[in-house]
Image (cartoon, rainbow, N blue to C red; front, side, top):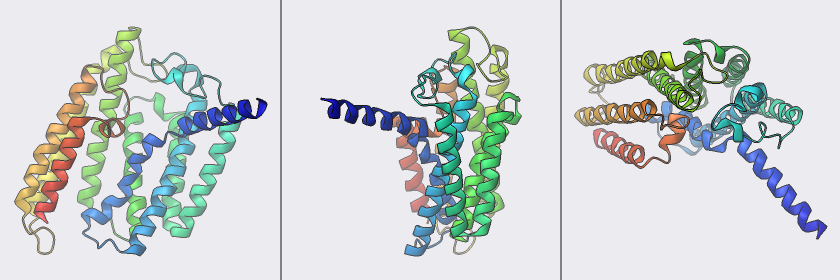
Length: 303
């Protein structure tokens, strides 16, 4: 009987740790493949191995940041509608153990990144430093917090570029930064709307309140529009270059689909129905998945 109880206890503890590491958010680390995809590099076995290593590096670094963030946010998370159920917040995982595991994950990510290249290790170090600063200070500073979130996405692009030995173009970097900033603002908008309905007050642990909803919406629309404009400029000026896209007109369809997806995400955020990171939410949202398939199809037709 005791062996069965110990096995169940160990299984439950493993499940709590797995939840705290947030594996659902690892989908964001697939951004490391973007330089290869948009750089039109042949997916050789060695390149795929390097990108797989970069993906693991980002997963380790991201989970380290999530653990530190949950420990830092214990008080505010207990007042949050959804975050109150996190294992560390509920006391199912000791905060000291969480910080110890976070340190091990961070060290592991740096060591593996250095095996890829010293430049990759430098970008991972920057990622870890930014996540630490975000957990300690930046998340409580309006505007700066969403810029920090967008920069974390951009660093994933750079890590992928170094791992694949492909320079991240200015076009891709500018498009990505604007898109990520729009999504970060949408996430904050959703939190503001949800918190307003639940408590009629500011978001716990954040610098936004009900009066910021309109500004967040305008900012998300503006950044999304700039991202689409960058993509449109690229299609007009560069997509028809020799050896890039043979049928670049198909890319206009992907631009329109991206605009539809951003509008869909912002509509959900404005209604308080986003409930999390837009990229993670998109992986289980039928409309987002359908639009993603259509975008991939349009890119394939363009090539």
